[in-house]
Length: 252
Image (cartoon, rainbow, N blue to C red):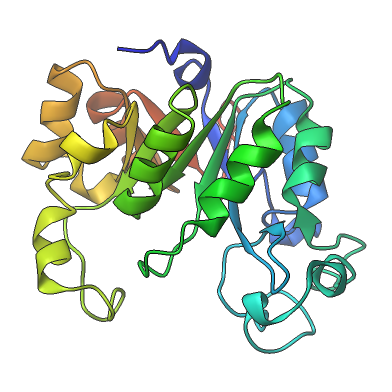
């Protein structure tokens, strides 16, 4: 069992410490910098550009957060990097940018997005970029194939699985019935041997996250947005991945 104390000792800012009311967009330089300045861990999302570069962006489409349209992975990194995020000075970041911003000052959770299609290029690209990074970090994903791949290619890297109790067909239309049954129960454990689990906060009472904690595997609660969810995370998880409030600050 590997020590994750560095990751569980402070709350983790979901997609950085973003706040639309203050013009701070998720997964942006401003959001990452604010999380570091606030003494929080940082969680970001990554995916590949058309030319195989690792960019920091959650959605598969550019439509919600940029003036661009269409799929993120249809554009080269240089084009993506030049796109502003909403009406702010921030641009889409590359993973290397985030590593330079954080510079080892905060634990970094990097969620690898996946189409569950067997493509391991993102995992390989992340491993290569992180080879010379000295700060605390971990790779995680909903896709156990990516995590199993990291286990085999870079076993020293901390790895986690992101999961929830139910995989609704509306949210997960492309998953097979086999995956719908196995993912909530983390039945991929023999392949992935993950170091931690990030489990959806509403499902923390399920048997799987409870079992993980009994086995000594840390559980993060995602995504915590309300006082009720925070109380649930404090009882049933080892740390929270939060947004929409700032831990330690009174609500406005």
